[in-house]
Image (cartoon, rainbow, N blue to C red; front, side):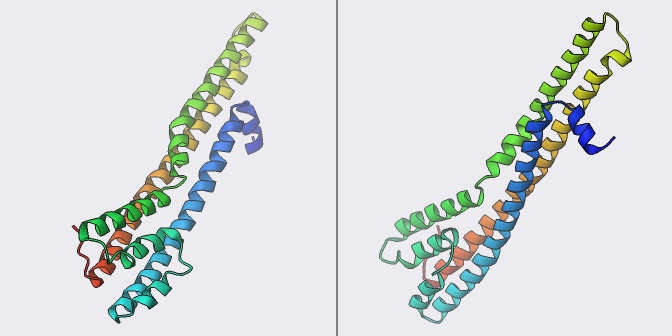
Length: 204
């Protein structure tokens, strides 16, 4: 039996599960690529800013932020433009920018969490439909037996398995990406704090 035959035998519920699967892989690959790009960018920009500040060239540090993404640039910009503020106010401004960066890194992850929790129930709905088809076949034929209920049971089992598979993949990607985002956010925060040290700003 080919994959297409299995898909068709699973009934109409396989179509939303297929859409879920496509979304899971699309979001996961997109986030993996964007998180790698963010890691490379903040390492490059952070090093340039810190080198410029270590050499006493704040204007050159600001220039290093040109062309950088907002997620990387805004926390550094808050530091460079906040020297006229008190320590507490400056720390609060930088903390807000860092929180915005972490939120930006988590963008779209909710889709993986939603699919991970809902896909099994979608598969379960297909299971119920398959069992109902089995009872309908029994009622129509007036007799029971495996040959009568086989189609409905097959549809139910395929839908159940498909829902579980989609959910497992979504959970794996969701947990991995959540861990990756938290690690990147922490590394970025340390990088910004190192920049603040060069400016004489100590984080509280």
